[in-house]
Image 1 (cartoon, one colour):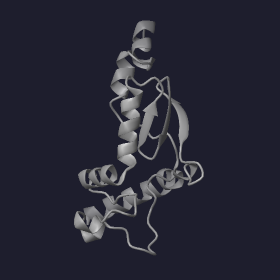
Image 2: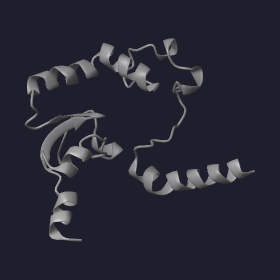
Image 3: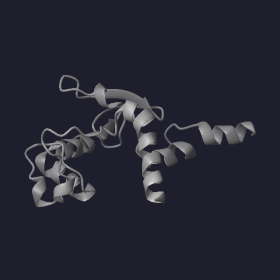
Image 4: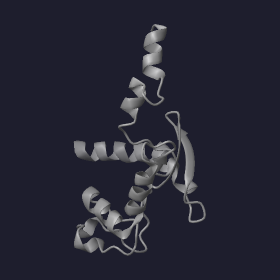
Length: 142
C-alpha cells in the first residue's frame, strides 16, 4: 500500500474521509462496570476528539453547537426523551418512572429478581456470546 493510500484509510481526525465515515457509526468506548452511580460521566478521546458521555450518548469536545448538544443530552436523559427513545428502539427504558407496559410486549420487560445477561459486559462479549451463538446455530440446524 502506498503512503497516500495508507493515510487516506488511517487518518480519522475531523474532516478526513475515514474520520467522516467512522463518525456515522456507534463506537463502544466503555465496559459495563466503568459507569457507576458515583461516576456517571466518562471522558474519552475517540477519532482524535475529546468527548464525555454516559450510557449511549456523548458530547464532543468542540461540537459545532455545544449548547444545542447539551440541551439535547438533557432532553434524552429526561422522562420524555427516555420514553421516546425506548419506544423507538423497542427496549426497556433505563428510568424506572416510565410505564413500559404501555408500549412493550410483556416478554421484553425485565422481571424483578431475574438475572439477565449484560450484553455490554466485557466477559460476556469475549466468552459467553460466542458460546451462545454456536449453541443457537446448533439448535437451528436441528
